[in-house]
Image (tube, rainbow, N blue to C red):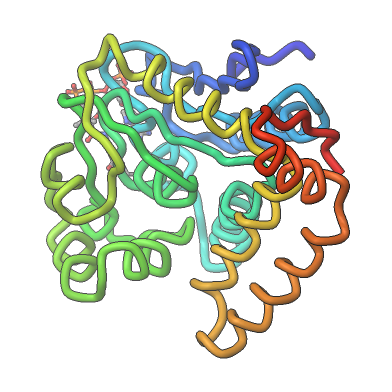
Length: 260
Ligand code: COA
């Protein structure tokens, strides 16, 4: 597919989606979001792909937010559609059937932080900067930031980040539990790919169901989440891969996954 705003590449068992508008610090225009959705379709339908890495082009920015020139034109009616469009693509990432890793290579501000929060895991380079500067534009986060950041960092830190609009660095993000690992810029993609290759060794259907069960833990009360976990656990036991995984362990050999 011919993309204008993102680069889609396959590296071993990973799809790398690079937001590619470096002259605007990879700001998320509507066109960028649309192409991000199409790139995710490609990763989803490709059985060789075990995980997705989302990053930004260049060394300065992951994504410096929604496109402020688009934000400036919104009114009460169009803003709702705008927020819901962004939320829908970020919800899709959160519910994606393969792990999605944000490889945060620089500024992740506003919609850029929200994109990172929607991914399943985040690896940041040491120069990365996070922040929710929307209140400084007379706005609040509209792509899920108030909801996801609060769940990830807790109400106190989320409030501090959102109402001050202050930027914070990668180590602070790691200390708050927002980032899995901080690495040098040169290692960012290789570290992310390493994670995907580890996932590729595991049963793909089980990985998909594990992601669903984890998602239930943030969407549902714990008792309901437990029911979902038990249902998904039992679904695993109807798969060829569960028979293969357990037999391979008992026979002291490596499993050969069928994906069902
Ligand atoms: N939307 C649209 N354009 C953006 C943008 C955004 N979110 N972020 C950066 N750009 C553009 C700038 O307007 C500039 O364009 P120009 O070269 O045509 O003037 C270009 O990207 C480079 O940005 P610049 O501000 O010159 O870089 P900097 O190094 O001085 O500052 C930032 C970097 C990230 C601190 C600064 O760009 C910034 O604050 N961006 C907006 C962040 C934000 O508020 N995001 C939340 C939106 S909800």
